[in-house]
Image 1 (cartoon, rainbow, N blue to C red):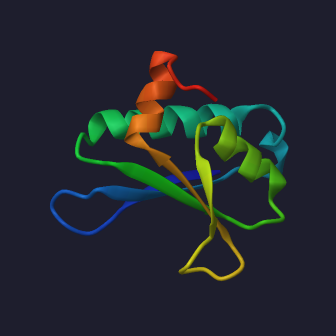
Image 2: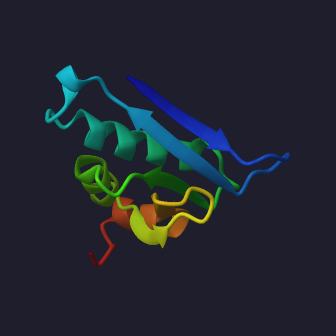
Length: 105
């Protein structure tokens, strides 16, 4: 598998793109949910200027969409740069609310 965080260009990036994949032998074991949540949270801690993380998913990939929602990512709709794909975003404020237990969802 692979986990990657691609930061926007510049000395103080405000956003990053998260991508990941896991071999079929590891599907359905909860690894994706754990890794996405942990890696997203750690990225906000280690990059204090970061305001959000986004991920792009094919609409047919229901498992990945569920993993992102479980980690607090919110569907934004069709991705403007990749026609036919859906964009999800996790803001720093939402991640902090989830971690503090004050997220209403």
